[in-house]
Length: 116
Length: 175
Image 1 (cartoon, chains in turn blue, yellow):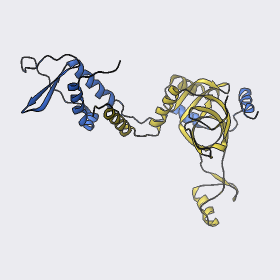
Image 2 (cartoon, rainbow over the protein chains, first blue to last red; image 1 turned 30 degrees about the vertical axis):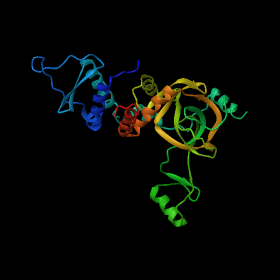
Image 3 (cartoon, rainbow over the protein chains, first blue to last red; image 1 turned 135 degrees about the vertical axis):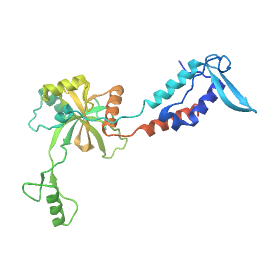
């Protein structure tokens, strides 16, 4: 199902990804406060409330489901970091060439088909 | 089966050189020489180029590149090895997927189950590749093989992933 985000939420996503380098490195630092410590509006999934000061947007309030979605997106991007692999003992053994190895009848048939 | 230029994901017979290593045998000297000996032979000859004798094996390979050019090109390939030519312990390791450098191909090719040696990236000329197709590996299995190669060659794909994700976000108006 395609992800549908409202324009305010889109804006908050844009803002988040502006500092993509920081996001890629470690994700967003979060602070948890109880509802009696701060007054925030209820926000439905897919919606966002932009808080302004002197007409300038300073923060956004989104539903916790949307926030978790963004966290998962960030974690998924971080998880793409490549890790070098090392060949094991089996691979090193398999690398050893055996000049005396014989063709199987099926291999000879396969090679013969290429000449027809 | 189709004939034509090698394409990514195809399994074809090829003449594949062994990894070049001392003692080096050449046409201008008898016996084997170490690296310094070959350098001395080249200097005595007055040219950088020197003719050496290499061992090779006729074996099925997995083609990693598709060239649209009709001229001869060098293709990156991976060697395959028949399962029954490996020791029991190595076969067990291949089947269990324990070793990141060995990938057991889902299908049999030229009548045998084979493992791809992901650590053995080799380039060979198109003239050393049979035109008859043995078989073809599907995109999903090629993606697995590609991931293995990237890890074993220590290719840093982080920047590439970051650039592509950013490009998609910009394309979708998210950044």
